[in-house]
Length: 395
Ligand SMILES: Nc1ncnc2c1ncn2[C@@H]1O[C@H](COP(=O)(O)OP(=O)(O)O)[C@@H](O)[C@H]1O
Ligand SMILES: O=P(O)(O)OC[C@H](O)CO
Image: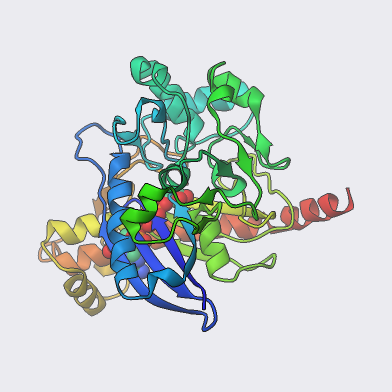
């Protein structure tokens, strides 16, 4: 009876699940915490790619320890989107720290590329980060031989093959979402060498390959185990939650907050608030993303030395509305709204209110209102959304 290993490479951790296909149940889990590298530079958010691999090894081994690993037939990776995993040409494990999707240092490059390409790219998009790298760390950019994303980097470690698929590639800003191909002209607008650094694209049903013998041995799996193309974490969440119809929406709370739904046609929003992503099945995934979701609440929790359970209990004891305390959660700058240089603010403090549970709740409320603004934007676009879908289907 077949088992499948699912890996999620998020900003705050790698998660592994073993899925039992016949019973449609998750039968084992593993997890490994990750964090952003400490920095005092505003807008910077970096991780070392080696930490993703350490996380994959550890989380997968934990999950596989509880099952008969010989039954595992395939592995699928869901990756944090937008972050860039370049410099692979310098050898696995030797890369410089790489920019996370939340990094907003490339705000100026985002403005420049938006003007040049006649579109709206926010600083999260990989293309803006590559232009930033070219300008600020030219030696690192010059050493770059291939550009991958976190998920495709992990697939490369698993199989030895570099490839990407449409769902994850849509977060680069140099991908033609309607045609599901690289947009070489947009890539060349970043750097003429960039089109040659991009990996081949796979369709939703094409495997990346089978496990490298070394990776198979490290995970305790057989070498004939297939690795699926996987996708960005948002597209994989849509698959996992069974969202397949226009009009259904998913809210996903992680370091970033995302809100998305499946569409039969690409969605174009000139303001850039709704990102025109592809999904993992050949359809599209209009998506709203905020940079500050659980990250703000986690910072509040950690500042008061509270465990997750304590923070949840104390926050539940506080009143909705937090006695007028407002936590604007833009700790990392923000992309929805597009305010990359904004910062977090706590308003309405009065004597006795500087409590961990209250600030934790206020941060969660702030992150929730951010996502609600995104939901309103998505709803406001629905008329046009159906119009575009109709044109597409008839065209
Ligand atoms: N519904 C929630 N309420 C409160 N905190 C949450 C919730 N969901 C996640 N978190 C917190 O956010 C952290 C990061 O979530 P996670 O999904 O692991 O993010 P990422 O995919 O970005 O790594 C979790 O470890 C947890 O502490
Ligand atoms: O690290 P996460 O899980 O917040 O993932 C980032 C998302 O992919 C952004 O769309």
